[in-house]
Length: 431
Image (cartoon, rainbow, N blue to C red):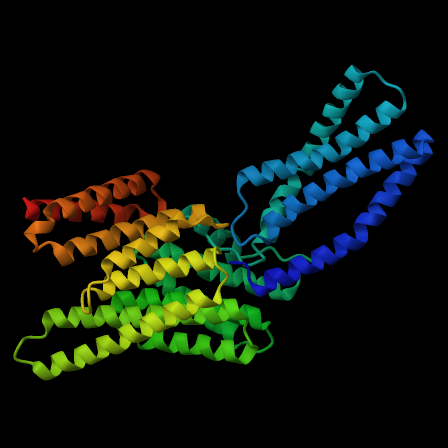
């Protein structure tokens, strides 16, 4: 999601645009009047060129200030718009001088092509500029591109020093995503000191520290899932909470804190579920302690999940993300508490159906979560012969989702193939 830093940069650009656009229009109108000696022609031509400049500027800003990496289609659209500006100027001048339509169109297109070719070297600059703002990789190719570009950012005059720190945060974020796909946890270990250095530097903007702390929580969560030791994970959540208090965070950032706390509660609940499987019936004290810990984690999970959902506007990407997380938590909790898997799966489906700005980027992650939760519900109910048909239908849906994710490749392919193997095992048990 866009950060406070991105919002501030966009507001500065907007203020500049409000001042410069009338000046741009007035200069164009004056030049066209000097050539055409006609007020209407000058105003119409200046208005057309100003409108095209506004569209090109909006596309440019969308690319640079988006939290997602610029796509090739957007770069091609930007290149076309940049070329159309001199092309339109050529068309207006030729019409003023009374040239025929055929000549005007041919020359205008030629000038537009030449203009696009002249602007082509700037496309690399656009992508580099975006890497100096907070970006979120959506795929392994995105993560690898960000890793390579942010490891040694190109230093240029006029770039705010804070933005080089943002490039380092992007580098750490890319390492974390690559580690999730490749099970290379050394990448996460490499990201940790970068994030801690950003957080500890008191000269930095608070928004940067919060961004780094958010990624630090994600990194420690990834390591905790592997080691089953949540101490550093808990410390990272506490650090994020301290920063939220110190900087006077907004509602969205406070919601993020509740989201991270709910994530840690879910980690504790998973650990309690695993302990239930190992604690023997003779060890009643251990079972009682595990039950108390699971109940406390479950209560905290529900409280923080609902608090996060309540703090963000309905229909936003964050709202959909937190609904999905709550749905997953309710399914996981069904292993040690009452069976709320139906409610949890309904929330995940509701999240996937929401039309939010980043719906496409969230879809594969949500489908993988839905398939995993369906599999957990099958395991909860597999001993009930009366549910055989229901479970077989769920396995068929899991298989359909998994094959679609395998076909899509990228980040979730390995997990999807694991789901296919698990579906085969459950089918054999239901025969």
